[in-house]
Length: 575
Image 1 (tube, one colour):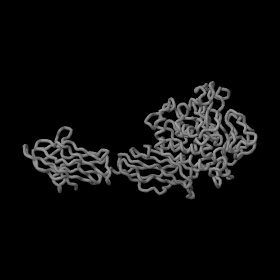
Image 2: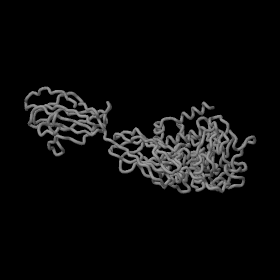
Image 3: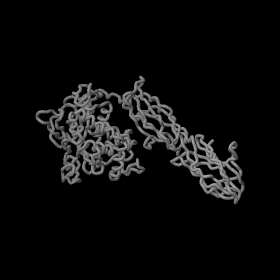
Image 4: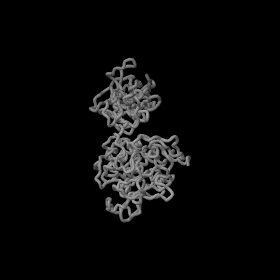
């Protein structure tokens, strides 16, 4: 079994290039009335939907709450390990395949919609309240639930009334709809939001890989930024329009952010309480609700008597944080303990226009005692009007600190604007002084110039050169594209001032000019100069081409008297 888990987890390390290709093909299936601002379009719907517009049809959900204390992982958390006894360890364990699906969905959204800042812990929180992590991880090796997970019939009897939209294809009901699968999508929502998360060519709401990826895209609709509380709350409410639902998901989100671990499939803790206080499925006579391999409670079936919630006591109200069994004030969140944000070894931020920066911004959040604080969100913003961005073209990104308090931003990428620019790091939801970094973008450079072709450049006085002058710029042997270049007809090798006679270019008005500025090499480092003309002066003249970075090339131009035979000129020389 351990080998199977290892193989499955390695599958989640597929390159984001494959993920991006899959999402590109699926992006056309956006929800009606919604468009994607990441693709240059604007949203036509509010971030918070009406009560009738939700992923689940506002179906019932599980109301169990996490323990008040932070989770503590057991000594061994690999597949097949015995259950731990640490604080909150059982609740913090997530079945291996389910956890893999959440993390894979996060990675794909990070590559395709980095501005959304979707954390996998949010998917875990929603998966917990919707299906108890796919009934404690009762899924096969491909991530499909061993038995269908169906919500109650949405016939208007205590729930929304949604008549059949899929002819029973997903939920088996040809009269009304029911929420389906581990993330509890109603058929009409799955029809446009469904995704193929495991690459098998199908979009199955009963598959945790498909459902988790679909949930991620659903939460990231429009221009939502889930690192901001407003965007996060709107996304959760769009899934199930209930303040109690929002509160429950946020509690699990914070709990999972404090720490979690993998447990074998089929051994996850299964919830009992539901928002409608309705029946849940009864376990088999020989097992208990939380036993490995048992069928967990699912909406719409019978349920056993409620047990006290973690952190609560018998008779406590499960709808209140901690089960209502504690009157102690809630401990401060990690963000609330942050006293300052410091640099964490960021190197010199410098790059050439159009290139990625070799160094990345690294920060550390600390408490008043100087100790690093983990699970803190840090926002990094490129300040001002510049085309400098983070990877993916975003002017701001949000990262989360690790257990040491450190967080590293995605790579910066220089645009065409050159100069010094500011990148600012701030702690999200905490009013503290920010930390500014200077990012320097230098003009593109070339260290060598060569002429393309070896035909002698000659013409008669008063005529024009038949062959164009073309050069190629390189930098450390590679093509130097977009390099600023200047071409000047000079007096001599030792006098680079502009000549007042001999060959010339023409400006837009047809007037003679002998210096061209603002030229740039193409993608292959090449540059073809405009046509060159000759006045009445005869002899050998020099054209000097120079680039940013100091590369120069001197080319000889031969002008003969009208009707005379041109003598061979010397080869171009680099200086």
